[in-house]
Picture (cartoon, protein in one colour):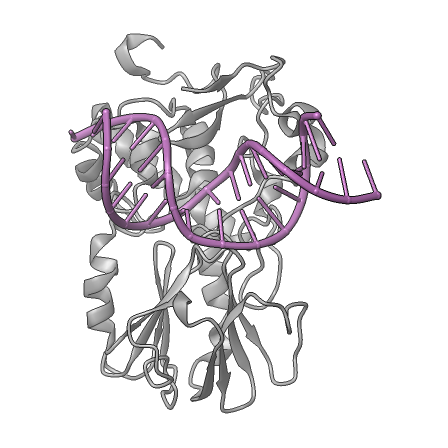
Length: 312
DNA sequence: CCTTAATCCTGGAAGC
DNA sequence: TGCTTCCAGGATTAAG
């Protein structure tokens, strides 16, 4: 495990420097609150019929790539979300065509009213653009192309292929369901919570924030949490995500919601992006480590609850 | 079961 | 200043 002790020479400079200068350079990927904010921003598209589809980069689409598969001629009847996955439904009663969108790390899905323009009108990362009957548009853009679009004959087929592999949605997960998943793995708690099959929607930002709020060490073994402790973990998870959604998600660099609005939750981050800076609770320095293959920031003094091997 | 590493990709930061 | 190198990260897959 790579460990950066505070003040040590190999500490990345952006962390050492601290302040807003250090924070804003760290990127955010869309996690559940950001994806939900995108979904809520797309509501003006509901009820509209898709007039045309421009597929500029066919390889971002998996499955059938025809305009019809991408909802041309369909009326958009629902915008759904599970974890970080979005689903655009093209008909009533699970009958119409269906498109799933995953934003990956840098993906965005935006609604533009008729005639509305934005900074990305002509860049090379606009992969799919849907034009609706009233002249408004939906736009999928993804510079790094870790995201993508999947086409299905209908929503049940999409759920079967994609959503059924995901754990319960993190915004509404019960302690009981979470406990069932956590008790089945001996991985580090952080690694388990990042696994979308365990619980769907958490990424690096909100896992680190959640573990700080609960006082758990990221390397605590997942299966050793008691039922009551997982109840509390689930409750705090729902509360954290709800608050982040209320703030419009986190914008660390360039995330915007479905209407191009930046989020505000980054101002409430207590650990993410704050490695090497003082803990807001105890004043000690936050430590940057790697857990589950991911950069992890935690407070070694505050997050000592039930560490493995009784070391806490 | 578990872990780490490689893969995809680009832009921004750091290093020389 | 400019060029090169490194790095982040979600999900998946392979290898150890």
